[in-house]
Length: 333
Image 1 (cartoon, rainbow, N blue to C red):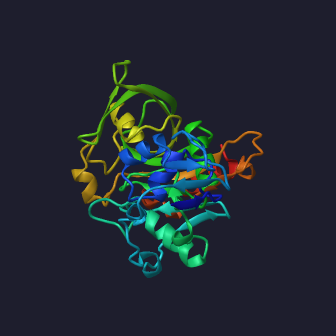
Image 2: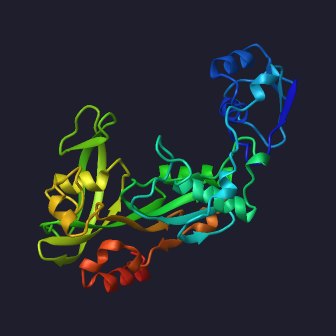
């Protein structure tokens, strides 16, 4: 028998979710069978798979030792990596970074160590704030994601409670997200709230936008205001009211103003010759709109985190952009 004591970063999870991370060698099908047949108990009592763990709970596992041998091995990456992070805000619970275009947030088949989350883990490990050997189910994690070729602010949680609260706030639209983007043409209205419907095709990683509701489509709301115009292009500030996949890129293209450098929802051949290697889109400020919340992350309520204009690579093409963006950041509107 093995006994696992639930720690602070493990609490608040369902039993099955915790075990899938803490006992990686145990197949899910067997885990559910063992819970059902009382080979896995909590505090020496029969339990349900959906039981929410509390700090100090003891999980008794009457299962073979081989299941505790994790198939994952520590290859020393966290000590070996030299963290390359542009940190814009940090406290004991969260970390906000400026992700540069071209950087992956999570690993894929072609990259593992050279991802934003691995650099964050290495940074916290080398600071002594994260030790994977002492954690049973938690690792620092990203609360929001940004496409590889988009830049901007990414939120990482340093502990499980921060991750839970921040994910809940994002789900409830309690974090206002503002982007800067450069588009072809000048929108007819300088300020507008756009509404439409979007459907994602996971196989092609493309989305389709419709003005009418259709089966499988989800509503989208995109606010924009024009900040500057240069030739046949315009610089916009966009607020994502809903946060769907490729929403800004697809929605602006849908109204006839695709982003510069965007070859997926526009034609970027000429844009590339002008230096637009990536789509001209940057998540440049967040406002924590938590209201009167005095909970775990309540101290963030009303706080704005923003990037300086010089961090946004395409602003140099708009002569009045720096002063305009500085004013927006100061006004917090």
